[in-house]
Image (tube, rainbow, N blue to C red; front, side, top):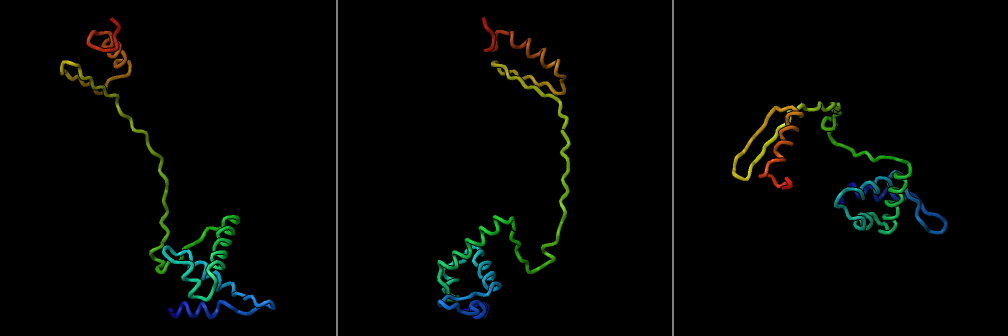
Length: 142
């Protein structure tokens, strides 16, 4: 058992009720609940190391999660290096719409490829209308 674990275990129980149940230090209880939230930590192992029933510790963790959800409290992680957690403001920028000219590429069944760049909409419409009437297109009704 590490020194931190034994120190927390010593602070956890502050007394006993008349019926024999333990009275727990709120600060030590909070530290133990936070320790349970560390990824990869076994709640049962923590309970065993601190002389608690695993179901009791699980109940504390669940109650804390419900309390935080109902009050809207967001947990804040402690960082060892404050410089690493420096606030860097992120300013949103408005996306500028890109003006792209219409581009049309046509591949004919005989292998001819026609490309139109920077054509106006009305020019493309008239070209497509004309091409759709040619007998080489499937869209024509002969």
